[in-house]
Image 1 (cartoon, protein in one colour):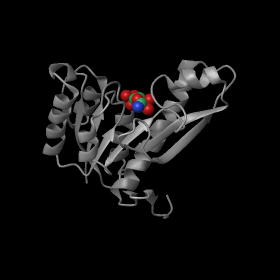
Image 2 (cartoon, protein in one colour):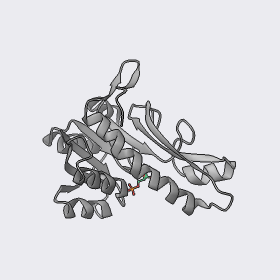
Image 3 (cartoon, rainbow, N blue to C red):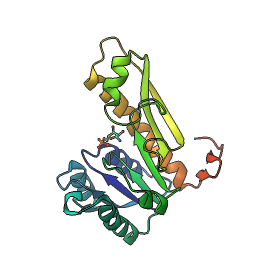
Image 4 (cartoon, protein in one colour):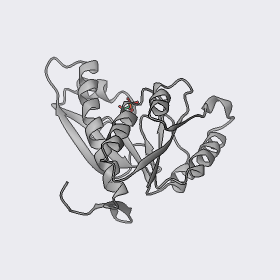
Length: 204
Ligand code: GRF
């Protein structure tokens, strides 16, 4: 199965997926293209180093969100992906985009959803004094960070944690759970059905 990954930045989650593919732990999946709306995203270098087609699609060159998403859809569809993975892709997608890839569009978000949708999740969690924080993989729907959750990992918040340390802890968990969720999907075990996500209960 073919996978297209969308990024905007460092691409450490992309790297985790590339590594999983290298260890044959991605359900036979192959990352066929990485697309970034930020031309200088470090993740594009990671893709090239792994021999993956790296496409820069700067959103600033488009007049509207609709025009950008239209171009993005074209680039993605050239690769006929079974799955589109958002890995730190910092653009709000249009309903048209979400509908086009509905049920085969995953995102990772740095919070235990439904808590802390949106930005600055670590700072907000710290400000609230929560004892647990974490990350979530979810199917993307038109509701921003509101699609059905597939898999989560929690971390304990330590008394001396600051935004940077908490972010680092959560990131490490992201790198663990994203490849697992992608593998489940590509193995055909994870699906988005009318009533929500289903996971065939076979052992890890
Ligand atoms: C991660 O924290 C992810 O949860 C969020 O964006 C960040 C991407 O980090 N959606 P990276 O580019 O994968 O290092």
